[in-house]
Length: 284
Image 1 (cartoon, rainbow, N blue to C red):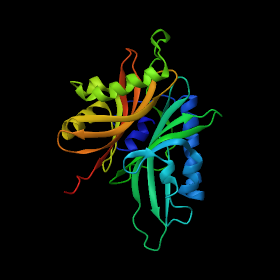
Image 2 (cartoon, rainbow, N blue to C red):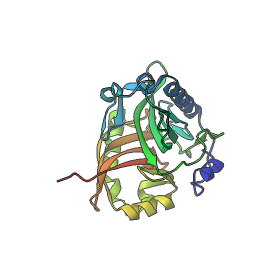
Image 3 (cartoon, rainbow, N blue to C red):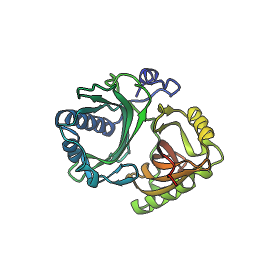
Image 4 (cartoon, rainbow, N blue to C red):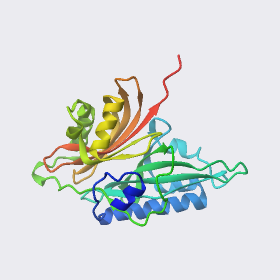
């Protein structure tokens, strides 16, 4: 996702982007095929084809997607869901990655209700047969469109050097360390200690924020974020991982979240993307 794209999306403060890796391009291509299938065949067929068997989605809490797929409308639904990836990233091993971008829901019924807008977010995992499939899917609604649905350029998240092999661990140990980092990230004294400079924050009902300054403002606005991770995954190369679960804030807000993490050159996990889905307070 390039500067011109960020300007169009209201994210002009984001830094210049680099060319996406081959794996990131593959993810974007698979995402576009997923979107085309959804428009042509409907949600049920598309999601069943492109989701991994153990995929997680948010309805509203993170849960196995298989249980909700049967409830998705098919091609006869009175609306069309369409989307396009504009930012993509992948691990050095080429086995794990993510992408995000705008979506639009168009009413095809006689009522012709106004379009609804938002941003999708997907974590993709390469399968044993080499194909990419969605491991985690969560979207956020936006109050307005954030630009054209079909931008001309795919942008990549800034690169970080691979972790030295001398400090590589097992995948199980890597995930345990990442989950521990997820639990303690809210203890960081500053936003810079927990987030990458180019990080993105998507909160349901708001426009996406990109860049540490925008995120620091949001952290001050919404208060301390306490996460309760329920699961996640880490690349074989140990440089990219994701977590998801529930959260609570000192303000009383609670909800569900997903995060993508990148391992810095200094051997510290930092947040690259955070998705927040606040939930209405429980009625007493």
